[in-house]
Length: 291
Ligand SMILES: [Zn+2]
View 1 (cartoon, protein in one colour):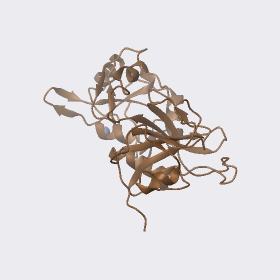
View 2 (cartoon, rainbow, N blue to C red):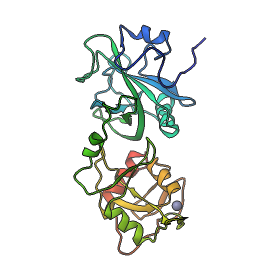
View 3 (tube, rainbow, N blue to C red):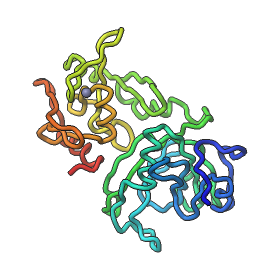
């Protein structure tokens, strides 16, 4: 019978732990799959991934990893021969993101990065899945993509400055709500929210708090690596927290006529002083599988 999935740290296997081979990882359920990169499924989430150089689009920056999901490649040549789909392990990584489950990241000797071991496999630590989207890979086929950020206990590794640097070009105030959510309220975001009197552009509701009305500024094309959206008026909409989460996760998107598509219907409410860059809307639609 298959061993149960285990999330988080496993006793006596700390960061930097070296495994001779994949079999060694299976004994402790550290990673239960012999051949696959992803240990997990759509129902339970993903507990561990192995970076083994199978996908040309992967990016490894150490504490931040852009990971390509599974599927669509030829088992012999490992070349991408068809589109990846949002099921199995790819759906599991999304579930891990939505439920805040930590993912053990393991680097293999065949993974091309300065952090990879020369032989065998090393445990890189726990990571959070903080973003998911789809795009066309170098092969031309659709790939499922994820951004993972280190969330383990080694504080030395995860200095806030390294996160701050990525956005340091622009004026901003950074507040961390949870590990998964970073709310950046820049002046431009505050201006947009004021323009709408803190009413959501989808449902027209506002949230009254003890300190006043509350809404969130949503970036259509996300800030930060690898999207690099702008913090500008033509890339920000004012949303309630529910619609903000739904928008960021692609439950709905917006077409060029500002109509809602996906699981919502209707039209985005718009102020006459506000406009959006259509290429940002297109980026959002594409990265969530619309058009
Ligand atoms: Zn709303």
